[in-house]
Image 1: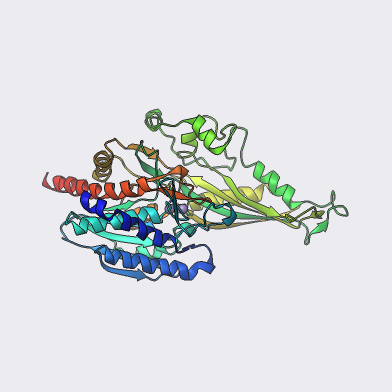
Image 2: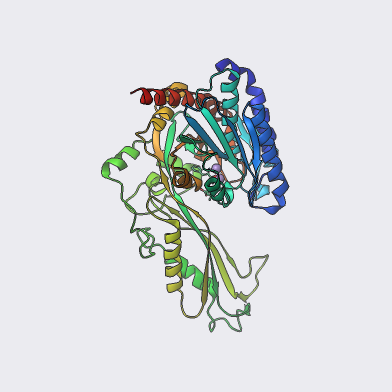
Length: 458
Ligand code: BES
Ligand code: MN
Ligand code: MN
């Protein structure tokens, strides 16, 4: 196996670069054909890797790529999930090299999707190829790579519900998260949920001269800013009534356990050019970004934002607001609480509209399972180190849905770094991470098959 990986290294990388050259931006209809071309290429690569019946499954949106290798129905089955779609690359002018012309610099691959998630799901394709080529695949495997993760996986839910039998498996394996550092491997044990809304505050029926009308007519942008400012208190807590009601606080022991993961606040501030960190009182930065919920304005607009100064009192103000959620917070419920509160705090001088976007449930994976133990052993064997369990701050909404629809738990065996600039200009993925991931994945299969067989024989 090691020899196979070593001998095919260059080709693995070149194939990933080929994948990174297609701009599979799911959010922008302009790239619809590119998204499909990417799905086709993924299908070809799965076939080339030795998987059977690789196909494109059509949805009302972008297609899902599916393939499998069933070697023995009595063996356990691993379902690999990933996404071949990427975030928009804007703003293009901030990229040092073009986002869809992958470039290798300082031992890193620079391209949109390099880490999130093309570089990471492709490690699975290559690990499976290596296992199949060297006769080392000890389980059945099903692979599902979707094209709408970055836009909320709107059509995957229906696909999963309609294909329960096809997707039947014992564990789901995903590489779409981060490790702490290349010398500090870790396994994420949780993801935050998401509620995402767009708000609109409307004042007068048209933009007005801010001299002629200013002072006598409500300015919706002023109002929106006041309303948004009131959504946090002095302690950094969210003021929406009921927002925290269902959250179960972690025990002191659980918090102490999580605090064992190394974190250097000075380094964190340096990296982001911050004078100080901020957030909810009583919690550390790692806690604020993982086990606590948030409310953030992602964008706000209205009035005049062009060159120079235009004196205008805008008719309308808008904002996009995201809330990251933690276990027991339900996205629909939170969206409703937000909508009620936001409408209630609006002054009678304006009209308010709240439009929900996609959401997702939070997820926590148990660490006392055979599956998690297999992941630990895989890291131990490939990295010569213990992987530290951590709670992640990002969201992969489909993970909770897999558990609900299929009753299957997920192992988040990601190999990225938070500093890989996911969703930002100059996204990159370390060659070390790409190759180390390909090396680690087969150990997961080996240990998982062994642990499962032991459990059956007991
Ligand atoms: N891979 C990320 C999520 C992630 C990144 C989890 C790093 C943990 C560590 C995923 O592609 C993503 O970006 N998800 C979106 C949610 C989606 C509904 C747009 C997110 O978290 O914003
Ligand atoms: Mn991702
Ligand atoms: Mn993403």
